[in-house]
Length: 501
Image (cartoon, rainbow, N blue to C red; front, side, top):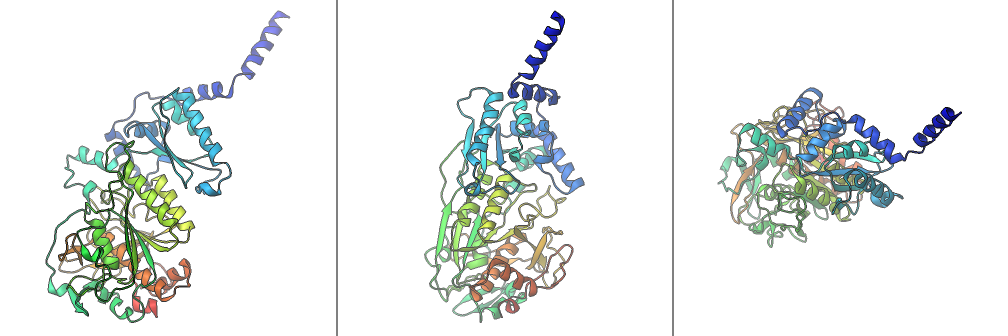
């Protein structure tokens, strides 16, 4: 009898164990490796997965691999949560606060009492950044059904590749796209139109100059997410309405924190310190000026720029956070119809993905660069976020072609449109320089993207009552391969005159 009572008592004790104790036991069973992988090991696996599967995603990695990435990235993780994979908008979630608190309680359970667990909680998205040190915490959190994604928030893939390959910051992908140089334009690369503006050679190839008889972009606002726009270039500042450009506005904003430490705060302003953003602004909306300088595609469109990162490679906490904020802010700006971003990463970033989806849900037409190769990303196809269905992926092609990518441009099934930006001479697109009264050339899928955003502004300006889908369909109908997309180059080059008629 006593033996039976003992067994009954033990059964009661086991069945009375708290949910937390049982969960802890399950977590302990899943942990095999106790030391985090090195940055070299992490990058090697990311590269191998990208080569074999086409893409790498932290959600598909093991808990140990994810924990290793968090540990090698200042012990900070980014978590997206919700009742479903599409539950990203905090304003549309009835229980976002409860789900967030559930996550924080699990972290406290395994991490113990800390001075700080929560680094940031997004105002508009179901997304938080948290401090994590223990592998047990990672395993436990991944069991929650409310987590949509769980990633390192400050793992610097490109910085680690630089160290592994022995390259310097100046020559590496981490500074890709930057440069404050000025170049005298070759006379063969432009024509001159009134009042005294240089028209890039590519405009003729896409029938943009003839399209100006029907539309110049007036009344349309483009949002630019990049490295900022130079305060030293008057035609993108106080003289934005120079020459034949009139009645429009330019607004410059900064949401980038220039610090290696994720916990640092304080935006460093809207001024471009890289040069890339200035080139993009010029390509899409530089004024039809009287100063003998290059004109942009939509020379009467309004422009709102966001300095969201230091350069085009979104590698690190503040770059990714800045881009997310820029997308949500532009999504919430009613006047913005088009968003252009010529930056990206070789794998997905959950918080940026949320930002893109948020802006898209607000009716924005989004253009993203398909990718421009660095010395160690030649194996990558279309980059993130251009591969997302909410974006239009753009790549650059050689002059007089629609299916010969530029020497450093990416191609692939996700590409939607192409833009001619590389001449047989090797010269690219003439643009305004970072400095006043000077010029430069810019290439790659970056300028192809900015130029296509300008084309969209011309179409929307001609048809102000149209929806995003109507504008997009008109662009497709006016392109090389419509109605059947090319396997690697989408609908091809757009005949802009046809698109605005």
